[in-house]
Length: 216
Image (tube, helix red, strand yellow):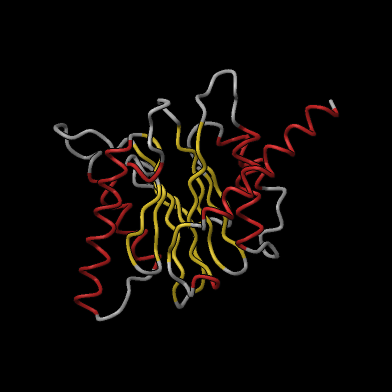
């Protein structure tokens, strides 16, 4: 799972394993990307039911904040709330820690923001980050990008390329790409990346890998 903060917004990307030939896909349940407010979304890795609880909590926090203050919750406040919620599950013997790591994408008056909230309750703000399987290799690829000049449309292609690069076809199951963004193009609304754009990025990433294998 990868998040990139670009000059015009934030893009989140995840691989959705295809567990069966009868699997409907990312739209049929088991989603890793969730919209929690108009200009805010979360991506979750690890245990999906735990991730769904994080997303539900974020949506409730955003709704309560807007009801009380009359405006959308800032990204840094949401990050603190989710970090405190995750940390709560590490304090008592009758609870277990959350088995999920969350990436939070927000676009508010402070501009585009990307945060990572770990199961321990530790949170950080990033220009780009990855979590889940192959995260170290993905972070190495992210460090090579010029995120200050990268647009969200370009980031969609880069995320697809990185996910395919770190995917081990011999060990890992086939997957579908799942992407969302909040950017200037969407008028600062968190939305799914259009399917045509995801499909184009997916095919370009596969071609690049094939060309790299042929050159080797």
